[in-house]
Amino acid sequence: MNTPLAERYAAVRHRLETAVRRAGRAPADVTLVAVSKYHPAEAVAAVAALGQRDFGENYVQEALQKQEALAGEDILWHCIGHVQSRKAKDVAGRFALIHTVDSEKLAHNLHKALWRPEDDTCPVVQDVLLQVNIGEEVQKSGIDAAETARLAETVLQLPTLRLCGLMCLPPFFDDGEAARPFFAALRKLRDDLELSLGVPLPHLSMGMSGDFEQAVEEGATIVRVGTDIFGPRPPRP
Ligand SMILES: *Cc1c(COP(=O)(O)O)cnc(C)c1O
Image 1 (tube, helix red, strand yellow):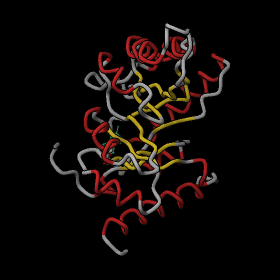
Image 2 (cartoon, helix red, strand yellow):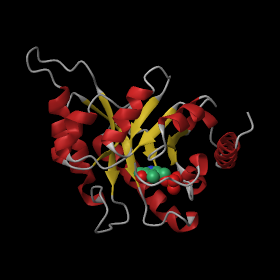
Image 3 (cartoon, protein in one colour):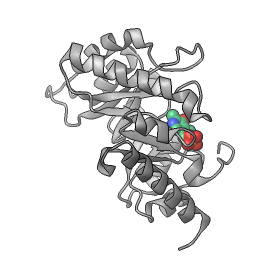
Image 4 (cartoon, protein in one colour):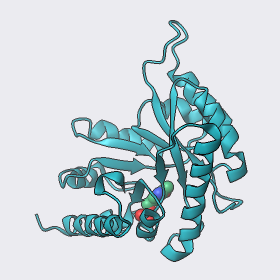
């Protein structure tokens, strides 16, 4: 099937594999998340048919609609958009990984949505990352680097949540070299947290269409690529 979609997907896979090898890493160490926000369920199905398993969505309602439409597919859904703490119950337990925990309130609300007080159990453990505002941008969501250790300690105490690492959106995303120092900073923050908290934090979710190669070189284990796979985004549905 030689559609443009298949060609774009193959090109991204090729770039990713090349970057992984150049960094002296193993292909299995980096997961490609195909970011399908605004694209219809049919486009997701088409990329899934090419062998892609992980998909990322930013908006809760849009994500849940696609999950329902594609319920028969072997897909792992990633929540990569900001989640308001009052929407926690809509996302808890419905994504393989929530990348965007950025407040105590959201962490507690996710916990409340998953905990079963009637029998004191948590039937589902939700994997999460902490989103760090690594460029210290006023308008951007994410927790400040300096606050990250405290939020990590909170999440580690909640039995319904499994803390897997950190995620960031650097201030630059069309210029990979400009983004590189922010990727390096996220990695250093992760390394420091592993030491100070004494827990493994294996995942670094960083890198998009314009900068995922640099992110891989700086230690990304998850890259989130939308435009270079699906083409330009249509207007928000
Ligand atoms: C939209 C989005 C992406 C994908 O961006 P592209 O530049 O289209 O690859 C990745 N991560 C997050 C958090 C996004 O919102």
